Length: 585
Image 1 (cartoon, helix red, strand yellow):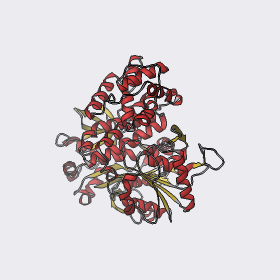
Image 2 (cartoon, one colour):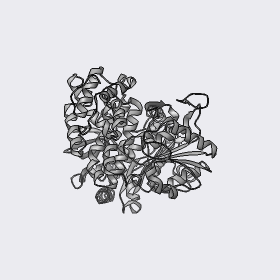
Image 3 (spheres, helix red, strand yellow):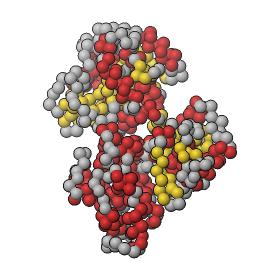
Image 4 (spheres, one colour):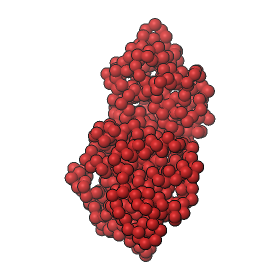
């Protein structure tokens, strides 16, 4: 796959803020162009092409200085001031005709997870956002019967907010490119490339990819830039570097080399021992922790880290391995008691590689640990791993039950974050995107489709981002003791709790803004289809029911949108386990 970035325009609306609009800084030392190139490289796109026009020599020098080792080909449009980028595409034809392609304007700022969605699509797509109002001057797309039929700046019936970020499958791209060439052959070169698309929109299917509020916008004016600087500062990409795609093993060595690492501590799940030797060399390994890791497990990891004088932390596994790594990174125990205390600074930089598409722990700043069987939540911004690799190759051997359980964990996290008291506009956008991806890719994922597995990793990561902001609610709070007492996998336990909890919300006349009764029915059907809806095989004693009721974390209930009494909790647990409500043991 190739990428073509359009940078042949004059950027006149930006004034003299930079010699080229794409070289305007959105953070200290970070240009718009830097954000795009880094995102493309992190998503595995190596063959980059760029059209140039105004101040092409400046742009060429910048590329040569900052990206000397990357495959970036510049195609100059010498008549940039007389033509639009349709002509620049025509000039680039010989370079970009033979493959799937990513097209983007050089003034776009976007979250890297948006680009990953575009790249991962098995269809030709254009980014839209149904949560955004129609812009006055910028692109809008007309969507009919689930397909984009017209793209332009004018407002027409069925128009939605759109941005010039595309993926075109080769079979579709050649059709558009041939029409672009026809436009140019008759001298029609001062229009958008989308004008050519509009002529042939019925000859191939261009699908809308709705980012539901995730950030993707153009910087055209100084006011846009002021907004862009503020938005970019808070993007997930600023807090954490994420690598998407298959075959990312080499990224581990690239990261270790970047930091001149001598001896990393690798924290991994026992089932992944076969992977460790081929992935990391000159390492110290640690896997002496339970599936629900105890504070004592973390203490052992810290002792090993310090004894061996390690200088980096890698976690490979599910949420347990990643949470132990978070503890090793940020907890101290000397003179602080059993619970430990948070350090002022991390012990080391960290890399997380999730091997389940579920917990989203790699994208949260809290860790779930236990002390004497009781759950503890530790929270701090520095618990967030510094680097993440999301690679479907790492989840290819996951057993089917655990696939389903992890998927349900991500789905439940996203759903709960939509009704959580702590939700924000940002958390809602991540949750909605995660839910859509899960439902769209679940069947393929269960049938070992690697593309769908990659999408499921993305969904879990987005669900993690959602709960990192909004936090979870009663369903999660109720699930932990079910796992502890009966050995039900965490995601399965959460889903068993979610059904009666959601039904209780409906009966309480609480309807979240982005969820309705039909969504509840959709989840229930999905749960039944997975064959995971039965908790009635467990026969708890009256004392265990009471223990379940008493175990619920009051803090988690405080984030739940309606109050739950002990009697109601008892009734919900009875419903989950298919037993008659028992009040006393």
